Length: 135
Image (cartoon, rainbow, N blue to C red; front, side):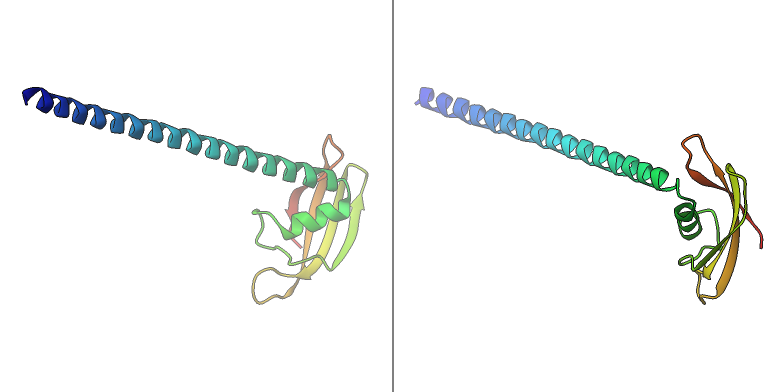
């Protein structure tokens, strides 16, 4: 009788230990899967960011695209346009240019506004907004 009682205690301890080991293994698997998912997400976000910047840089070789992109998006100006309706080139010497664009303002009430900006070519021959000039 004592032998069977000891056997039951040992089997209980063995089962408890085995459950604990399985729980630890599952926890380790979850951590590894979570780290793989986070790594994949970071790689995906970085590749999207890099691809977007390359797309903008390649298309900014056209002054019209650069004007439209810089006057309608970005964080630097409160004089943003919903879209560029009219664009006129005020000055251009090949490396720098001054462009005046007009259209509806992004802020409500959407009034017609005109924005002047100075653009400069970089070493990739892409146009970048150097500064906004007050109209």
